[in-house]
Image: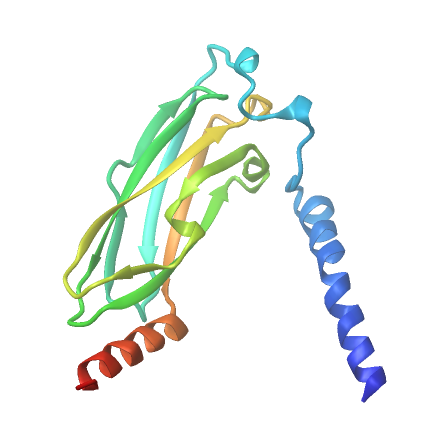
Length: 177
Protein backbone atom coordinates (compact mmCIF):
# COMPACT_ATOMS: atom_id res chain seq x y z
CA UNK A 1 0.00 0.00 0.00
CA UNK A 2 2.88 2.36 0.78
CA UNK A 3 4.36 1.75 -2.68
CA UNK A 4 0.98 2.45 -4.30
CA UNK A 5 0.69 5.72 -2.32
CA UNK A 6 4.22 6.75 -3.30
CA UNK A 7 3.54 5.84 -6.92
CA UNK A 8 0.29 7.84 -6.94
CA UNK A 9 2.07 10.84 -5.43
CA UNK A 10 4.85 10.59 -7.99
CA UNK A 11 2.39 10.34 -10.87
CA UNK A 12 0.40 13.34 -9.60
CA UNK A 13 3.57 15.37 -9.15
CA UNK A 14 4.67 14.57 -12.72
CA UNK A 15 1.39 15.80 -14.26
CA UNK A 16 2.50 19.46 -14.21
CA UNK A 17 5.63 18.94 -16.33
CA UNK A 18 3.73 16.53 -18.61
CA UNK A 19 0.99 19.15 -19.12
CA UNK A 20 3.63 21.77 -19.92
CA UNK A 21 5.31 19.47 -22.44
CA UNK A 22 1.97 18.61 -24.08
CA UNK A 23 0.93 22.26 -24.36
CA UNK A 24 4.21 23.79 -25.43
CA UNK A 25 5.82 21.07 -27.52
CA UNK A 26 2.87 19.18 -28.99
CA UNK A 27 0.16 21.87 -29.28
CA UNK A 28 2.45 24.92 -29.61
CA UNK A 29 0.71 26.84 -26.80
CA UNK A 30 3.01 29.11 -24.80
CA UNK A 31 2.25 28.93 -21.07
CA UNK A 32 4.71 31.53 -19.78
CA UNK A 33 6.04 34.79 -21.09
CA UNK A 34 9.12 36.78 -20.20
CA UNK A 35 8.83 40.42 -19.16
CA UNK A 36 10.10 41.43 -22.60
CA UNK A 37 7.16 39.63 -24.18
CA UNK A 38 4.55 41.25 -21.90
CA UNK A 39 1.19 41.77 -23.55
CA UNK A 40 0.60 45.23 -22.09
CA UNK A 41 3.73 46.82 -23.56
CA UNK A 42 2.42 50.14 -24.84
CA UNK A 43 5.42 50.59 -27.19
CA UNK A 44 4.44 47.44 -29.09
CA UNK A 45 1.01 48.81 -30.02
CA UNK A 46 0.95 49.50 -33.73
CA UNK A 47 -1.49 50.31 -36.48
CA UNK A 48 -2.18 46.60 -36.92
CA UNK A 49 -5.72 45.43 -36.27
CA UNK A 50 -7.09 41.98 -35.57
CA UNK A 51 -10.68 40.80 -35.85
CA UNK A 52 -11.86 38.93 -32.78
CA UNK A 53 -14.98 36.83 -33.37
CA UNK A 54 -17.17 35.67 -30.48
CA UNK A 55 -19.11 32.43 -30.19
CA UNK A 56 -21.00 30.75 -27.38
CA UNK A 57 -23.20 27.77 -26.65
CA UNK A 58 -24.38 25.40 -23.95
CA UNK A 59 -24.08 21.68 -23.35
CA UNK A 60 -27.40 19.87 -23.88
CA UNK A 61 -27.69 19.11 -20.13
CA UNK A 62 -27.80 22.82 -19.26
CA UNK A 63 -31.18 24.57 -19.71
CA UNK A 64 -29.65 27.95 -20.46
CA UNK A 65 -29.42 30.20 -23.47
CA UNK A 66 -25.97 31.69 -23.94
CA UNK A 67 -24.60 33.87 -26.75
CA UNK A 68 -22.28 36.82 -27.33
CA UNK A 69 -23.82 40.31 -27.39
CA UNK A 70 -21.73 41.11 -30.48
CA UNK A 71 -20.37 38.72 -33.05
CA UNK A 72 -17.03 40.44 -33.72
CA UNK A 73 -14.81 43.37 -32.83
CA UNK A 74 -11.74 44.96 -34.40
CA UNK A 75 -8.90 45.34 -31.87
CA UNK A 76 -5.36 46.68 -31.74
CA UNK A 77 -2.76 44.33 -30.25
CA UNK A 78 -1.51 45.46 -26.84
CA UNK A 79 -4.73 47.26 -25.86
CA UNK A 80 -7.38 45.96 -23.47
CA UNK A 81 -10.94 45.37 -24.69
CA UNK A 82 -14.19 44.13 -23.20
CA UNK A 83 -16.90 41.99 -24.74
CA UNK A 84 -20.04 40.65 -23.08
CA UNK A 85 -22.07 37.49 -23.33
CA UNK A 86 -25.71 37.11 -22.31
CA UNK A 87 -26.87 34.09 -20.30
CA UNK A 88 -30.46 33.15 -19.49
CA UNK A 89 -31.56 30.35 -17.17
CA UNK A 90 -34.69 28.94 -18.84
CA UNK A 91 -35.39 26.42 -16.07
CA UNK A 92 -37.61 26.75 -12.99
CA UNK A 93 -34.76 26.39 -10.50
CA UNK A 94 -31.33 27.85 -9.76
CA UNK A 95 -28.49 26.18 -11.67
CA UNK A 96 -24.72 26.54 -11.51
CA UNK A 97 -22.82 26.53 -14.80
CA UNK A 98 -19.12 26.55 -15.67
CA UNK A 99 -17.77 27.98 -18.92
CA UNK A 100 -14.92 26.39 -20.87
CA UNK A 101 -13.15 28.79 -23.26
CA UNK A 102 -11.34 27.99 -26.46
CA UNK A 103 -9.35 30.15 -28.86
CA UNK A 104 -8.92 29.46 -32.56
CA UNK A 105 -6.65 29.12 -34.35
CA UNK A 106 -4.89 27.09 -31.67
CA UNK A 107 -1.54 28.76 -32.30
CA UNK A 108 -3.10 32.13 -31.39
CA UNK A 109 -4.16 30.94 -27.93
CA UNK A 110 -0.79 31.79 -26.41
CA UNK A 111 -1.17 35.37 -27.63
CA UNK A 112 -4.72 35.90 -26.34
CA UNK A 113 -4.91 36.82 -22.64
CA UNK A 114 -8.12 37.12 -20.65
CA UNK A 115 -7.57 39.57 -17.77
CA UNK A 116 -11.09 39.20 -16.39
CA UNK A 117 -13.57 36.50 -17.33
CA UNK A 118 -16.78 34.87 -16.15
CA UNK A 119 -15.06 31.59 -17.02
CA UNK A 120 -12.69 31.96 -14.05
CA UNK A 121 -15.49 31.00 -11.60
CA UNK A 122 -18.71 28.99 -11.65
CA UNK A 123 -21.82 31.07 -12.38
CA UNK A 124 -25.13 30.68 -10.54
CA UNK A 125 -28.28 31.84 -12.32
CA UNK A 126 -31.62 31.80 -10.54
CA UNK A 127 -34.73 30.52 -12.36
CA UNK A 128 -35.48 32.88 -15.26
CA UNK A 129 -32.48 35.12 -14.49
CA UNK A 130 -30.67 36.88 -17.33
CA UNK A 131 -27.15 38.21 -16.89
CA UNK A 132 -24.56 39.98 -19.01
CA UNK A 133 -21.15 38.43 -18.41
CA UNK A 134 -18.02 40.42 -19.33
CA UNK A 135 -14.68 39.19 -20.57
CA UNK A 136 -11.71 41.56 -20.75
CA UNK A 137 -8.82 40.60 -22.99
CA UNK A 138 -5.60 41.71 -24.63
CA UNK A 139 -4.11 40.38 -27.86
CA UNK A 140 -0.32 40.13 -27.61
CA UNK A 141 1.48 42.39 -30.13
CA UNK A 142 3.77 39.42 -30.90
CA UNK A 143 0.89 37.54 -32.51
CA UNK A 144 2.19 36.08 -35.80
CA UNK A 145 1.57 38.51 -38.66
CA UNK A 146 -0.39 36.00 -40.72
CA UNK A 147 -3.07 35.64 -38.01
CA UNK A 148 -5.72 38.22 -38.85
CA UNK A 149 -8.75 36.69 -37.09
CA UNK A 150 -9.10 35.07 -33.67
CA UNK A 151 -12.25 33.30 -32.49
CA UNK A 152 -13.07 33.23 -28.78
CA UNK A 153 -15.64 30.56 -28.03
CA UNK A 154 -17.26 29.43 -24.78
CA UNK A 155 -19.29 26.35 -23.97
CA UNK A 156 -21.25 26.37 -20.71
CA UNK A 157 -21.69 23.08 -18.88
CA UNK A 158 -23.96 22.31 -15.95
CA UNK A 159 -21.89 22.01 -12.79
CA UNK A 160 -23.74 19.05 -11.25
CA UNK A 161 -21.79 19.11 -7.98
CA UNK A 162 -22.37 22.78 -7.22
CA UNK A 163 -25.97 22.67 -8.46
CA UNK A 164 -26.68 19.73 -6.10
CA UNK A 165 -25.10 21.61 -3.19
CA UNK A 166 -27.14 24.68 -4.07
CA UNK A 167 -30.36 22.62 -4.20
CA UNK A 168 -29.45 20.94 -0.89
CA UNK A 169 -28.77 24.23 0.90
CA UNK A 170 -31.99 25.73 -0.46
CA UNK A 171 -34.02 22.71 0.71
CA UNK A 172 -32.32 22.85 4.13
CA UNK A 173 -33.08 26.55 4.56
CA UNK A 174 -36.78 25.95 3.70
CA UNK A 175 -37.00 23.02 6.13
CA UNK A 176 -35.51 24.97 9.07
CA UNK A 177 -38.08 26.17 11.67
